[in-house]
Length: 110
Length: 112
Image (tube, rainbow over all chains, first blue to last red; front, side):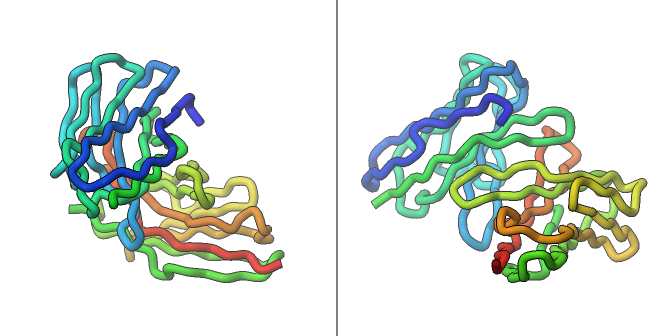
């Protein structure tokens, strides 16, 4: 599993509240990613990071921000959660040409 | 941009039969392809990859075939087992940022 953990694993929140998801890795990987997975869409990239304090937007970045103050942690924040952000969120790292994924966080926005 | 798709969203096979999952891509410059398996409630896991200079690559009970002429790849699973029940994705890397495009996935169900 490339030493990737995500927290929380499940969260239910209300529209308009802020939410932060955490991805933690233990193997000093440079690249980290946040994806969301929805039926009929596959994995879609939200944001990624190529080093501490170096981040960039992905395909579906609107409504999300990220921070990476340490190599091991990549945080995804929903400043004001909306129902359209109900999804399963996966963190990933890349190692060579492969990506390794965390176990996922199921977020429900009511 | 890259387009990655799967022909069949669901596939049911009898235990012991062979399974074939297909994927089409649009960028003829793609030079690397990956298959992932995702079991229910888990993150995707790497199964096998293939480079564009190959037509075929075999792993343990899995074979990936690449047809660059029609921009199509397939994943073949031999003697399918109940533990093979999962969603299977193909993925192709973009040229920058170690990013990938993922197909929407095919759900494989193995009938005992």
